[in-house]
Length: 392
Image (tube, rainbow, N blue to C red):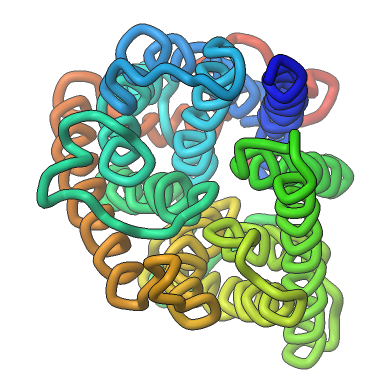
């Protein structure tokens, strides 16, 4: 018993390390996709999200999510830290999508509310063990590591924020869509690959145990299918982009990989290899089709977070009902659909209301002048690349 307890504690601590490695992953990905004049602000947002969201979850959110739950299979502190490592990821999804025009103070205020109340409530009705779990809100949804609980939650929050904040200055003019190129492709690649590696702890650690042969096999299958879905997403996205434009766009290939990883996150422990390829490949294709679709509706998302996290969070959760439906495991398409719907209505409505209210007091949107100058100067007073001439 003691050896299993120690092994599972060590495994969880290692998984936590991989998940927290996703913090610089998000930071580098977003820093590479925005213009040089906004890099310091993006990096500051990512650091503040990790610090503020984690503290809000430690002080308030964990109890709301899990009540007085006590772990008996591993150290309580390891379980606590593992759950804390997740919370910032949902908010990272939002922060990247409103980059280059959102101010730090209102984002930080919303981060506190997200980490303490909104995200923990979603956890409670899906993974948690408190009073909400035992009510009509019980989702009975299979979502191992959060295709809906984390990725769709972040995506619905981002959609609400974009509708309130609006697009970046000059992004849309008349019927024209201005293409704003990424500033640093090597950073984009580094960030995406750090996220990919972090996903092994994200999904593998969510199995919860590795101390027996059966548990070890489940962890290995989970990580294998996670990686396989990412590979399929990258390949399908790259192929579709080439067929359409006769070019290989590395940013779209990487977002295709991330889309595949998001999609498989709901049930990598239940899939066969071919299931993972199908789920991840469709995820990569969805990213390719969703990015121009959001632009058509003038929903400005500089990092493609809605296409990667919202669309594939939904797809990945529904895919469980299509590829792993099993009454013995309680997996049904209807149950998955219910989970997607409940989270969508709750998160979008409450996020929209809170962002709307904060925006009345502390406007989220930076002024046009600050956007032209760059948020590094107006928000941070520290430019990431001071020797470069700032581009308008």
